[in-house]
Length: 187
Length: 190
Image (cartoon, rainbow over all chains, first blue to last red; front, side, top):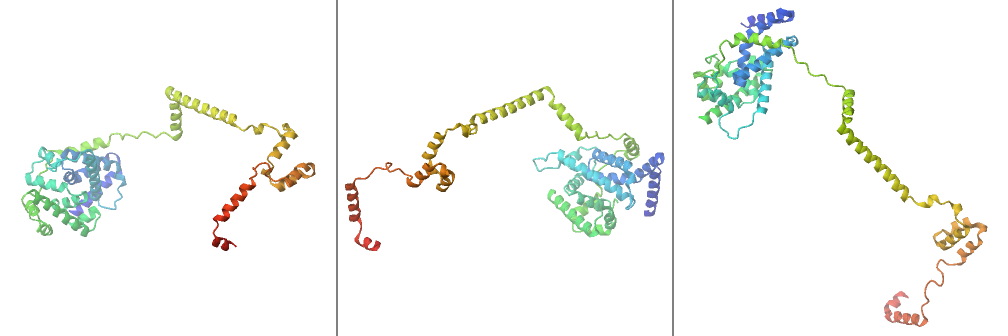
């Protein structure tokens, strides 16, 4: 499967380098190959579908306009993932600046928003889990999502995030303990 | 991905019962994606990516900015204010210059030739004590023997200046002083 992924990446990059209509074909192939994985990474960071859609579209527009800057020093997905997460973090920071902090320490605005969201059909436990994930710092949130939901190995995560495996294990352990504490206190 | 296949992950969650239970019972987040979302996304992105990129407005050069600044100064209301300030500054400079001219000492306007010899002689005689003796002697020389003699023979204070004490009063004063002096103090002094 890894070999297949590398072949697809080569094909995508080759088409993009050709330019013109071939570049569009290459870009379509790139999106078909990675859009779903990237969407879920972004969605689990911003939670709301419309927000995830905005972030993902901006991210792919940037990739389309700057694909020539990809040097091939890392895997194509690593490059795409970093662009997408940077875009998501920028979006979240802007959103934090726009939103005022609620005076009461009740349910988070994200949880309230998700409750009314037609693109969320989870139960109360899942809502609590998402609210707990929202409390994590950006990097810990990435590590937790990749490990808990995607079950990605630390070796793959290390390549993706450019962090040592030991640091990632520690980061996941801290994140998981925080979430467990949040769930226990909410129960 | 819906089940916990990774043994290492299961071990990691072993000491966290809530998370482990949630992972086993509802492994996903409950987040849904609209139907056919991924089918239409590439077309939407390509349409956006091909839209012309809005160019940032070019920044004016410093000469253009300076020109705009001075052009702004020539606007009627700014020009009026600028003219008023300028008029106040000019008036201030003129007024300060005038008062300086009025309060300037008149010495500069009087020439030494306008003073007569008698006036000069009278001034020097009256203020002879203010002058250094050696300087007076050196300056006077043989042309002014009167000043030279006067400065040597006459003391700085004229004799008639202080009143003469009466002899009786003086004797009384001395007697009083002698009476007041202690014999021991006198011996010490001697």
